[in-house]
Image (tube, rainbow, N blue to C red; front, side, top):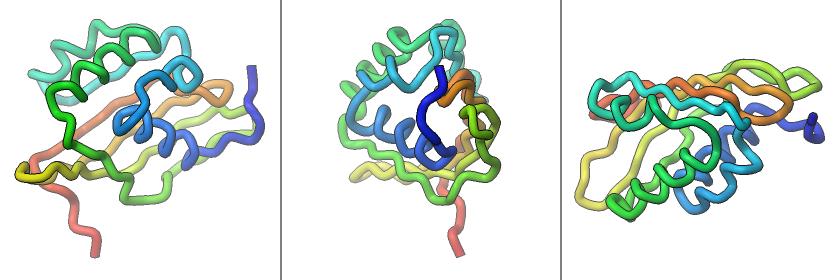
Length: 132
């Protein structure tokens, strides 16, 4: 089902909201066959088996319980766009903030279908990107 004129920037903002404050929005944001792919051997062991909104929401809830102070921030406008039906691929640059913990940064590549996220590939590093 197509949503009303959803944009790549809106989906990226919703994805960040899911991680920062509200894992329950996974059910409206993600497709039933949603997949999350991390480019980290350690992280992908726990995320590659995840399927769909309920499993991702449970994973994020567990992550938030362990790292309640972390906040993710999108650093850039989306590169790429969605068509009128909400289909397409785009990427955003992000960083994390957490008191007493060095910031991390990364790039997420999103695949959207009918205004919902179907798959995300996330590459992160141990420092944020320079923003100058």
